[in-house]
Length: 261
Image (cartoon, rainbow, N blue to C red; front, side):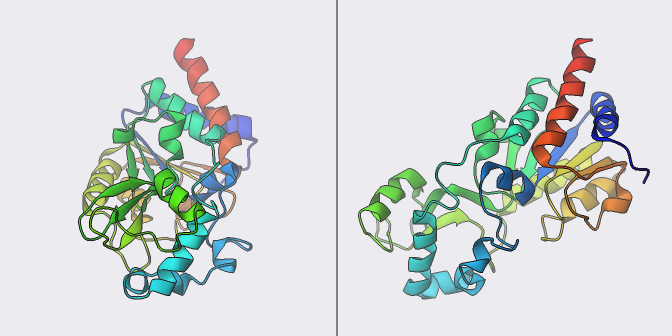
């Protein structure tokens, strides 16, 4: 693909958005990291401090020590406290306000799309939402802020206040299936859109990474905004090597100008 500057590429993507009827935005860790949330897989990320083997669903269920380590990590606030939406989140929310967003499909579990203003019913969280915990016995949900109070008081393995069952962060663990309803709807939206914009994902984690494949197979145009290469780069109508916030802000600025002009 011919190298062009960000302004020229943003102009191209803005034109695609203006002409599209159904725009799906797919976000990955490259969006969250710009809010200060550490990546799992990158050097210096969470797996450099914690053993991923301790975070399989099966081990979490059978091993209290694995549960203690999980709650310790969350209690430190690495994923759950203090993070705020960044320009990428706000730009995506602006697309919705401009009437140009069908939905967001995200691999992230941080709730920041909703905080930025995307309606919750337009956010499909393939890997769950870490801002909640759920009892595996009775299904009771707890906001993480409520659990954090217990952790701060020294409780190492919080259980359900209703039935004392095992409580689990409401995010998808290794060895756990993605939420069926969310995956089904995300697959449908991907297959039914005419423009699919990938922001901040290397597209190597499946089944989430099937979404742009479904979109491309259905004839949608594909835009990829990511600092590193992805397996779908050759399929992209526009490929942007830039940070999520910078690229999305430029793009949405152009969209706003075209709509108002």
